[in-house]
Each structure stands twice: as C-alpha cells, then as structure tokens.
Image (cartoon, rainbow, N blue to C red; front, side):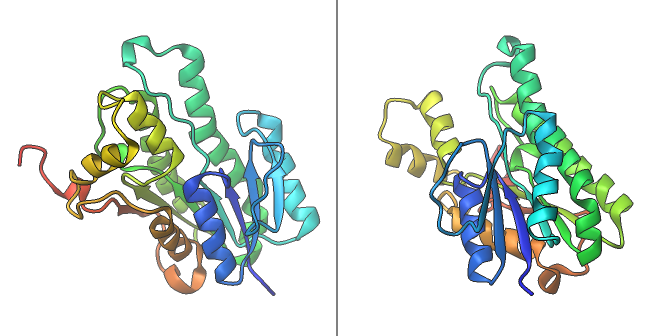
Length: 248
C-alpha cells in the first residue's frame, strides 16, 4: 500500500516541491493550505484550513483518518513571517507567527500521533537557519523557528520509538516568502534576479537554494527506509551559510 504524507503550507515553494517529490516516490499526498481552492497536480487530497484556528487541527486529522485510515509522515511546513523591527512588533503579529509556526505544529503532531504510531511513521518540522543564526527585523520568526527546533527534540523523546521526529533547517531558498522579504529589505528597488544573486554570494555555494533541493531532504527525513535511525535531530541545508564566520 502507498505511503501517505500530510504536508502543511503545501501551496508554497517548499511545500509543493515536497509534494512533487513524495509523489514521484510513490506516496499519496494530502496537502493543507489556507487558500480555498488550489490546482496542484501532485496533491491527491487537498484540505483548505487556517492553521491559526485551533478547530482546524482536529478537523485535518479526522479527514485523514476517514479518507485514508493511515498516515506515514506529517510534514509541518506552514509558516508566517513578519519582517519589522522588534520595537514595532504588535501583540497580534507576534501571536500570529507563534500560532501558525509553533502551536499548529505541536497540536497537529498530537492529533495525528495515533495514525503515525500505527505505521511507525515520522514527523518533519521545517524550521529555518534563523533558529541558529539570524538577522535584524525578523525576531518573531526567528523565535518561532528556534522553538520548533526545541519542540522537535522534546517530541522525539516522548514519541520514541514509535514515531521519529526531526527538523529541517533550510537557508535562503528561492520561494515567495524569500522574495517578499528581499523586496521589503534595504535592497528593495533592484531587480529580483539581482537581489537573489547578491544574497546567494553570501553563501559558501555562491547561490540561493532551490525548493526541489529542500524537498529531497524532506523526503529523506520523512521516509523510514532512508532515515530509520535518526530522530531528535536538526538537519541544516543552507549552502554552507552558517559554516562561515561573519567576520571573515
């Protein structure tokens, strides 16, 4: 029987690349996003849901149970990013980031645990290099991604040995979220290709990543046959960005 993967934030760059990669590997893909309707061929079952609403969480888990009766991997990929100085951050903005990026991941893990336990499945939490090294004007996002990395370790301990839990920490990847952030930054006004090239030169690899490259790592962590003895870990895929000293 085919494996079932549940991906949140599936309409985004990394989310959909992960859906395509799992589909190529023979998985059935269940996708979650806040858009009412999407036309994404790699998704077998689409569930429109706002992860900021607590009621959506159990509804998602119930839908997977009723439609498939099985789940092999939960990929917590959905994220909200607010780019502004810490002194200007509002309570509502902080809560939105934490609710979608951390709370939803926790309660989805809780709600889908029985299904994942039955298949000896996995959870992949898509964190960020901002969990370990960050920049100005992104405090709430960085805090949420650090919390997600800590949550990964905690759940790995509690869910073992039935369910593996790992985090993936992508660096700069060419997605809509990255492009929006660049347009709001101090380099705004230049062509997007120039912004991406300038950012890419700051990495050891000399370029930003592709969503498809991150998707390969998601599949690795999700699949029992590829990473069966790995849990509680954080895999950094950042083109070497965090390997280089900022003073170099």
